[in-house]
Length: 497
Image (cartoon, rainbow, N blue to C red; front, top):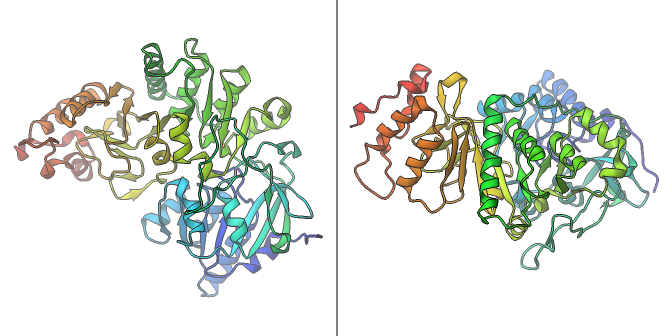
């Protein structure tokens, strides 16, 4: 079939107010670079003429400034799911200019197929190549496009000439059957291949191909600061101790790691560690430090949904595809984050928290309980099903004005039933096999900053009984003190005694 090559502006003309769009990609990689920018320009023009123009954007996870950033600045987003991380969209969400529902990343694709979110009008796919019969070679992030594309009425292909054809064979595109016909997902090692190297679409749905030439524009993470280094060191010390005592099998287990400075610090320590054996990763995102782990052989294989490399490291990958080609596999989000596979493989999960309370509950999403930061992402998929679930965060933020260890989290994303280990720059709290009072004392002693330990003990002493020694009238005294005075250290528990 002969495809039409069109401009991004011509594609945008197809997209009207209320259109629901499914995008390829997961984090910046794989996401469109041109079509949604043209849609934003159209929205700006429509708004100037007094017309309503907003669209619904469903993805695999976060996108980039070409999508969420520019669409938020032009106030062109009506509904967004399942995860975002751009400051402009965050502002729209928190002032109710944009609707946003937060979902576990493993659930979004299957719930779309179940019909929970209505029809998909348009799919925009970033691709390295497309054949006449509709075989699409995807880019560096898959997300949920294997679900969105077959459902879409119209498809646009952004053919990105910066993507090498050598990506062929690095994708493993597999969709499970929906209930009641679903069977087990046959992944028994992170390196098992179970699907297709390309995405098959209906060529007749392709309304046009837009040529682009962009790397993903991911900025390198800054060098981990002292706090991140201390957290990273504590995480690896914990893993080494577990391995020494036989609580991790001698073959070791696959690792999952979130994204950011703390995650980079952990992976850097793993790179230089001499005691733990070589390992594989079964994760949702691999970042710059993973490429170094693969290069030196410490990590032997990485299964992921997205290669979220900075532009410099992405160029290194593309220049050495022969070496890395059989060491990385890209999967759809509902497979990379699938609870069944995570549980079967015994993945050790390492995620970050905004705050944690003294009983082991974790807030991953909301600042001071109300303001959305990014979303839950895949942390729930992994922590609930992990062999060991580790959460980490700095003990304080804003120069000590905020304690990230609080009496009660202001928003709970992961309950104490899912969190095994809590780690801050202060140390490690092993919560396994402990009741709520024991967990509280362990977290205060090992994870809270010294400036806040006595305050947290004061809170704990208020309890008048019950299995969980919480005092509801005082539970948010830290948050209240910050709202009123700008410093959680001003919390006064004496008035609750």
